[in-house]
View (cartoon, protein in one colour):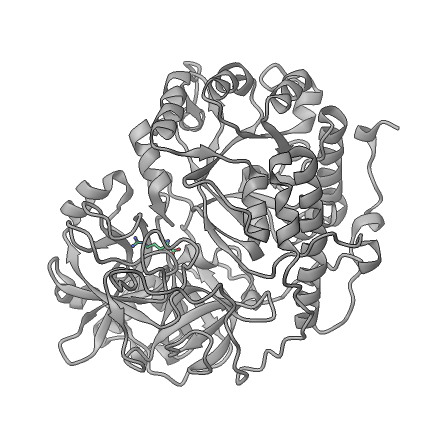
Length: 613
Ligand code: ARG
């Protein structure tokens, strides 16, 4: 049978939709989904990555039991994390700060996920109205409301302090991720709570109160994030911490952080370093005193270069730039907590049409049939990990043709520049790892080299073989190439041939799927998605001899159904074009990337690799 012509009937792979309680279903689907994934991963490791076979033995430790979750808001839940971090030498917290006084920040919010039997903290947030939590867009982008829960006013994670409230709507800023010049632009999102919180909200800084956050003002940032930049494993601090950081002028901020900072962001910190937010603090508040014993929400923790390093600052979303957007979403009833000046401004300004909001219709989660699940040889260790590993996204490695449009130019890195990127990474001590190394780390804690980086190339252009491949080999580096199978099948000279792909695979590169024909995978029928998933996977397996397990969504477009179908078709992970370098074990189908542009110099690249986002 010609595998490439094979078009399975939708029945074959569409999981049954059982009517069990959705929360139990989520737990079960996680277990049934992740166990075969990990066991397949181990088998793959065994065959392909021989050096890693040792992992299988030490990973068969803690088997999670399917525990039905009680999502009742009064139930106290514990937090899953690795052993509480031991305070490091200098007792530095949040980086350079101190533990908060319990109860001092009643509007502080822990944003958590409940894809495991326990709630897992992943970002900070601030209560800005009785029903609304403000956080960073990069924390919740593409999450479904039913995957997020919030605890208002909690001090120690895992304790039963605070008020646990469900989220029924996520409003990500419409321009987040669509700015050509600033990857982190509009890193702001609102979470609508299913019922009002008891705590009093914090008021956002407005145009009228701007001088209260003038450069030099000492602000306070609050969070449960890492205690130091190196704290990559023990990224969580159990007790809420705070640190004081002065607000930095926009000029100073721009000079130190390069082209990355727009007028919608603000910097805070010390040029000598030492005090900063860090991994895990994202989404959390930066506040300034309001002059009356209260606080004004001035920034949202967004990104940084490492943490607390000299010459760099923490970068925050500048809340005062988003007053209109906030008002647009926070209903009149709830605006009582916003300062008067802000409300009258809003009355005077005609309201722009509200962006269509995703309604809270939770899609049934894929439920792989337990009978079809092979007896796993090893279990996931049950730990939800967070790993900061940049996945670089390249496209063309060639000089763009003279008639090239701005997009093509933006996507083209010259071979000389590409060589300089590789040399700079090698000199700075980076080690290229495969997507599979990253997955093994996330699901089982397989060790990673000190400065890991994944190189990916989208679309499978022929210049990848002609220009990138020899340079990679010269430096002993590996990369993953996401190919469009119909383009190769049609022998289009702009793309790789299967011969080339085989040669690359044989030299340690990986060939993975970018779909059959580079059409969007968003809002598609199951049937069509199965055709894309199995069609591309079977073609690659037939041509290369290895089953691809990773999909990169064409145009970065996908939805929950795309993930469900690709999972059921045997894929283990999905790669997006969302900016960031932080990945979570329970979010393998929304891996983030770091875009490399035509204009990205080697120095820019090193700076991008150091980003804490
Ligand atoms: N983006 C990080 C997170 O996801 C936090 C960034 C803050 N880093 C800093 N150095 N200020 O938690």
